[in-house]
Image (cartoon, rainbow, N blue to C red; front, top):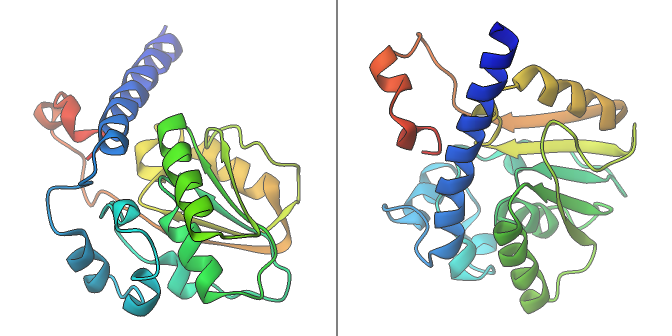
Length: 199
């Protein structure tokens, strides 16, 4: 019975997250604070950031995994929960020696925004795919580097996410994750605030 309850709770959480990020994708603003000030505080390369369309600089990051990447010639990179593609584009600009760079996101609206920006800026060697973190649309051992920025915390079944990362990474592959973690358990009152799941 508990497994069924957990599954139901997971689905409810995923739906709340989807609803939140669909609203973000439909908005031209992103988050309520100034996005560029967020990127500056996280150490994003401002000169590269300014090369990207303003409407994909949504301020959804909580870190800067691209800055810490180690990329060799031809390395295939995958961004989990790519959203509008900001980290994918930053990786392409910062590491032109990389091979294909993929972004995967669950929401069609996010993929559409990312693809529109890719076409507008004429980026090559980038592909966006719709998919979920717990069932990535990639072959075993096909990726050299995995990045993720403030996304894994949104998925209830984190164990499955890490199993998928392990599955798609090549031997000696690496993953670079920036995310939010809890220092202590959330109160029951906070757990019931559904609007917090996405934010």
